[in-house]
Image (cartoon, rainbow, N blue to C red; front, side, top):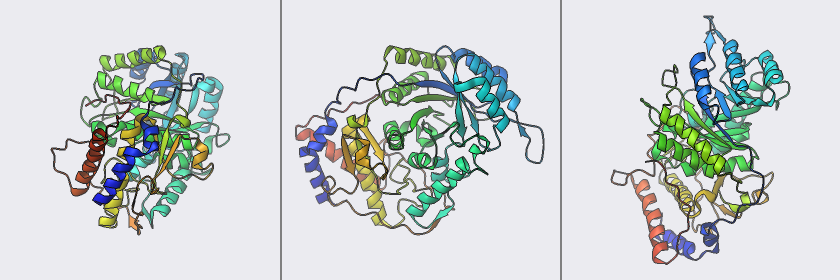
Length: 467
C-alpha cells in the first residue's frame, strides 16, 4: 500500500466524526425483554449410558442439547441403517430433563419421516430442529472432505454455485434434508462453521454457530472477527446465531482449559450470541472429553448469565463494514483462500495488495469499534441502510478509505490445489512473515501510534481472551 494512502487514512481517522461515533461508549441498551438464551453441550459419541450420565451432569445448568452422533447399525451394502432407537432413547431422556434439543445428521434419510412425526407429537417445541451437515463453509475454504464447490469461473459464479449446491442439500424436495418434513420450514436448520457464514445463511440455514477452535485458528484467531462476521450475516438475514466451542488442539486433552472455556462463554454472551454450545467427544468419537473442572465452568457461566440478564444490542447501536460483493474470503489471515478455489495472489501483486487492504480495514475497524462492529456483504432486500445500523462503512467508499483499489478479476479455478497453511494475523511478530503480513502489522501499528500521539483516546471495550 502506498505511504500517501496510509497518511491520508491516518489523518482521516484522527479527524473523522465517524471515528468518534465508533469509539465513544455505546449508547445505553434499549429496554426490552431478555431474549431466549440457549446454553448446552454437543455430544458426538454413541454410548447411551455415557450420554445419559453427561445429561445428568449438565441438566440443572443448561437448557439445550445436541444429539450429535448419527450412529449406524448393521452391515449392508450402504453401511447399515441409522440407529433411530438410540436416537429416541436419548431424545426422551433429554426431554424428560426439560432440555431443548436438536439432532445432527449428514444424510437426508435421517431422521426418517416417521421419526420426525413421532418427535413432533412426543416432544413438541422442545425438539427444535436438525443440525444438518457440518462446516460447509470451512470445508470449502480448506478443500476438506466434501467441499461445496469444485470449480468456478469467477467469484460471482462461485457464490452462485455455493448457494445453489448447498440450498439443494438443504431444501431440494428430492435430495434435501427437508424432504422428510411435512413442509419445508417445519423445523429449523442449524450448522456449525468457521467461514463463509454469509453464504450458509443465504443457502437456507436458520442458525449458524461460529466456531472457536483449531479449524478456525484456535488462540491465534480473532474470536471477535468471527463473531462480527456471523452476527452481521444473521442480522442481515433476520436469523439467529451462536458460538460452538470446539477442540483447541488435535490431541488429548483436545479442549481448552476450564478458565479459557469460561472466558469464551462470557465473551459469546456479551456479544449477544443466542446459542453457546460446548463440543464434547474425542478424536475416535468414542467418549466424552470434558472433565469436572470444565463442566464446573459451564455451571459457573450459567450462574453468571442468570445473575447478569442481558438485553441484546440493536443494529442502531452498532456499525457495519460492507465487504465487496461475492468476495468469499476466509479471513483467518491475509493468505487465506477465496471459496477454497483461489489463493490471495490470484492476480499477482494486485490481488495481494487488495487482500491486504481489505484485511487492514477489517482489523482497523475492529480496533476502533470492538464488539460494536458487524461485517456483511451487500444486500438488496432490504437495502443495507434499512437494516438500521448507526454507521455504514463501505469497502470502496473513498471518503473513508482513499485510493482503495478495485477488486481484481478472478479467472476459472478448479479446487485441486492444497490451500496454504493459515498463519494468523495475530501471531507473535518475532516470527518470520512475508511482505503482506508485515505490511498489515505496520499499518495497524502506525494508525494506533498516530492516534495516541494525536491525543485521541481510544474507548474500545476490550475483552481478555485466552492465550
